Structures are given as structure tokens and as C-alpha cells.
Image 1 (cartoon, rainbow, N blue to C red):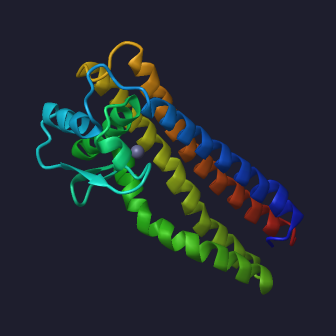
Image 2 (image 1 turned 180 degrees about the horizontal axis):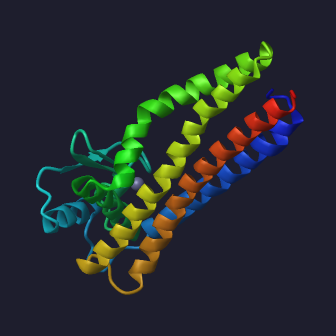
Length: 227
Ligand SMILES: [Zn+2]
């Protein structure tokens, strides 16, 4: 199937272009605003600690993590982990990313419904992403189309997961931009820089969801050709 021209034209090439473009955009924007220092000069760690303290969150720690763009909030460990370039940096990128991760903390505290749904989908997706393609292939090889359609259903959970991720990420960024204004972490024009960084980051999630959609579409076309 991977030498199928439909696969190459419909999935492989668009996915490669989209992923490359989105990642380039993220890294470019991130690096651009990593060079711009905020007036307040708060480091990513200070931004996160300030937001958590002001919002009354006392049981979440802020710690450094290795790598670039590896920043995340771990709800089980109750930890906001900021990458090396964010943790100790006073740049606009650092403020934006640190505030975004705190956005996830506040979602967790409030029991934001899409975050809960996303967490509940994780085991389902792990199964669906492995079983889906296997069932589709088995269905096509043995010409049992119902089995192949069952595989499509399994694989559809992957798309669902990536679609549910979108409101979670957009909401965290919305909260972040509001927080940096509200708490005076960024001022005036600095807000635009933070918005650019978070906007670019959101693109990668859209690209991932679209890639899952193209894969699903391809499987549907593949089965339909058998009729
Ligand atoms: Zn996020």
C-alpha cells in the first residue's frame, strides 16, 4: 500500500509538506522571540510560579526538563516542566510557553471537559492506532470487508483524539495570553510576540489532526475500491 500512487499523492506528500512547514514555522517564531527580552524580564520559571501563586495553585511544582520545545504539564506528577531555553530565559517565547503550560494546570484544576475527554481517550487511541491498520489489512487480504470497516472505526479514534486535542491547546493559549496581560508579565507590543509564538505552536496540532484525517480518508478509499 505504501507504493500506491494514491497513498503517495493523498497522504505521504501533503503530510510531509504540512509537517515540515508547521515545524519550520514553530521553530522560526520560537527562535525569533527567544531573542526578544520582556520589559519585566521574568524568566519562564518565574512566570509559571507567579501565575500559579496568583491563581492559588499550591500543589504544582515548576521544574526544568532537557531538550528544546519539550515543555509540558504532567497532571499525574503535578509538575510544569519547562525546557532549558524557557526555564531560565526572560524572553517573550519563554513567557508565552510558561504561561501556556500554566493554562493546562488551570484546565486541570477546573476539570475542563475537553482535557478530561482527551485523557480518557489515551488508552482507546493506543489500541485503535495499532489495531486499526491491522484489521484493515487483514480485511483486505482475506476480503472480509466488514473486518476492514471495523479497522476504520478503530483508526477513527486516532482522528478523534487529535481533534479533541485542538480545543485543549487553543484554550490553554487563550488563558496564557489573558494571564500575561492580567498579571502584567508582558506589556504593550510584547503581547503580539507571545501570540505569534502560541499561534505557531497551535499549527503543529492542526497539522497532526489533518494528517490523521488524510490517513483515515485513504483507508476508506482503499476499502471502497474493493467493491
Ligand atoms: Zn499545550
